Image 1: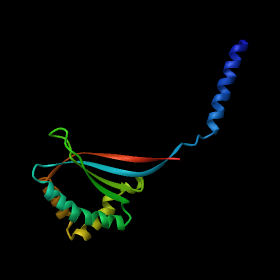
Image 2: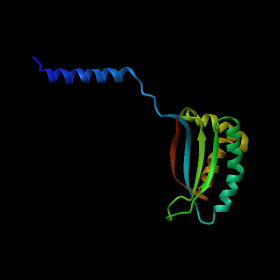
Image 3: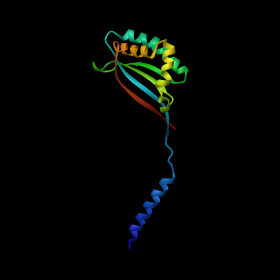
Length: 148
C-alpha cells in the first residue's frame, strides 16, 4: 500500500503532465525573413574592380530577382580587417522565409541568364573568374525572430 505523501506526489505529477499536454504555449516571437550572409575578403588592389562588378552585374541581377519576387532585398557592407585572413566585406540577401530557399537555383538561374545575357556555363565561369578579385571566407544563414 502506498503512503499518503507518495499518492500526493503522484497526483501532482499526473496533473502537471496532463495540463501541459493540452495547452500550447504562445511563443513571444514569430519567424521572419531569412538572410544569407556571405563573408568576403577582397584581394589587395581589387577593391575598386570588385565594387564595379557589384555596382553593375551583381546589382542588375539582384534587382531582377527582387522584381521577380525571389528575394526581398540585398545589401553590401564593408568592414576594416582585424587580421590579414579576415573578411572585409559582407553581402546579404534577404528571403521571405526558409521555403523561399527551396529550388532557389531553379528559380534564380533563368533570371540571371536573361538579365546578364549569359549561359549557365558562362555564369559559372564568371563566378570562377571573380575568385581573382575576392575569396569567399564563409556563409551564414540567419532567421529573423520578430518579437510580438
